[in-house]
Length: 439
Image 1 (cartoon, rainbow, N blue to C red):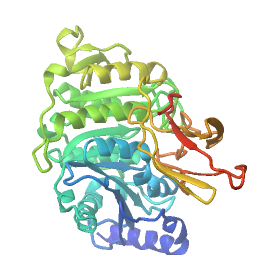
Image 2 (cartoon, rainbow, N blue to C red):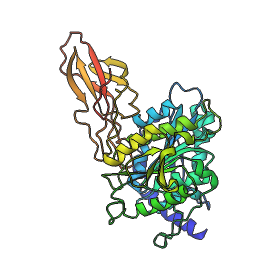
Image 3 (cartoon, one colour):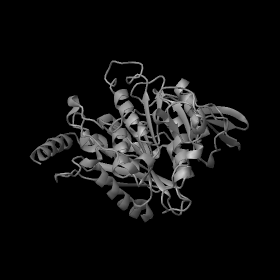
Image 4 (cartoon, rainbow, N blue to C red):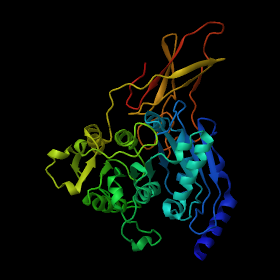
């Protein structure tokens, strides 16, 4: 207890000295809502301040679930959580399933112990459940405190998401663990990390362990080389007991998120479709064993579970044929294909010489850019050169923990070359990350 209090005092001093970076928020106006909690000095409670931002689809009457996008460890990743709820691609997944989208941002100083939040037993589980009550009240959706959770986490966020599965398996519809998993056996070199046990109920929760090949799969040295050993141990333990767990290795990356969202989206979509009740408030449904596909660990070909000839207790589990196909593409070259165009922009308005619009991102491939046409001819692209240092270029940019760049890019275009006094016809066309255009 004394150690915990001293740690808190040290971290609190550090936070009060730096103050700034965590107060640069995008505005939280409906359909966004935000709560923030100060650090606590009480044993067992969260020793860092934290804010939670939620996005709620405008037309949803009763929420059926909540998708949680959890950043990783370190000050930079924590700051990146500030924009997680504003990600248009993740919003498209949430909207399809009548879910809210929540992004926490823990105010962890750079050299502070990440385990003090990414282990949910250290107060972050309780803080998260409190935020669901408070955000439910703010948003007019009190059911938010009771609906199931779909968890996505990067690095320490993967550790947190996996820990929440093990603590609250009855609440979790599915969990995607990018480059971080709960520790099941003691590691002498990381004595601060407490181990977990896997309850029987957690074996029914679909889990995907996702990491880069340079995190110990093909590259055996470097800062993140130990990630594969932890993932492999976690996978083997859960799968040997019949757990619904898979592994997907990004063939190009290290710890950065790369193109993982193009597999995470169809995988979570399949799990949410199968598990969420048709009406909000119902119990989670079991995954159907008849639709499952299996693949060899670190392999690249999957087969229906009934036809799989290998050891099923050591095989990668996949929820259905469609996700098995996407998985096979992803582990080969991360180029998950998409043949359907994105939704067209909506609510287009012209104010002065500024064009503004709304859009729902393409669920499969997200949003790369917009084409602007005047009188039937293309006059611009927004942005001119979409960028992303970690994967496919996307409209909102991408930070290390898979969240939009801050400040947020706006859907707007100013036509400085239109002829004064002449009426023009404008069109805005959405382009997804595989180059397909909307109507």
